[in-house]
Length: 326
Image (cartoon, rainbow, N blue to C red; front, side, top):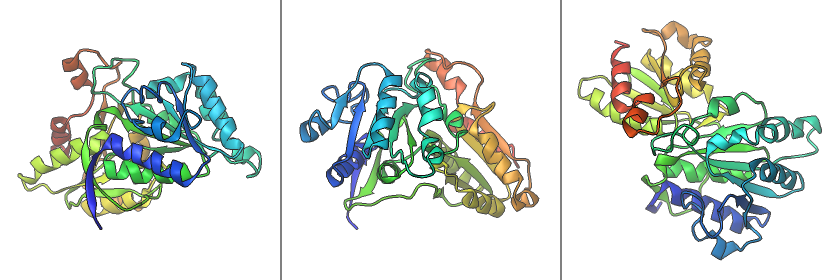
């Protein structure tokens, strides 16, 4: 299989473009996604290829255009709706949690909502408190809504193609500092099924269960720990819903220790659910140390870059957290 190197943003662009060529019902809508190519340039070149009928600029009215996307999906289209920042889901929360995830259930399967909502999430760019949050735990609470957070260009493309083909609403969260990260992907078409975790690094002494940008930070910490003969396994769950509990249980059962890492605030974060899944399984009896969680501090994200770095996990903090388990 021939491979090529592209960025995370290019991988997302390729996934959308390929699916739009494949299916005329796929279209994209959002703030400044056409001529401006989106806040992070992800849709560059798509207006020229697909035109304004399929690459649609919207007003700065998230509640309105997310609702329009739901209606289009119910009518047989497959919209890709882009929110400029994930923080703005709060503006269209009614559409996201009371409409999109519930329609198929309430209509007895006669109506589908095949909509993907893409958005830039997380901190690390100095975007401050209202443009830097990680809100995935809130989204994962609502049955019927799938939640995806890829960590590499390979995963971003394969998971997004599967999300666009899915007949259910999918939240696709893109950690904004990853957009320029490069990685290898196949030249040929491929997809990655939702709900399947991936071991990014094999290990025997401790499992780091993580996702998004924290996968890269965890791999960096794991390399440092390897020099001290601590062999860490890094498990990227990739999708929060559906969750690959079997992979988590199998990995922790093998390594006997678990550290859960996410960029979101630790208190009330998705790490609590991951810890619960481990504790309620037979893996609990294999643990040689308590399950440990590492997340962001319970405070708004500061604008100051030095203060910002103090709020969320870093490779150094992950290293220390793993060491504390021995």
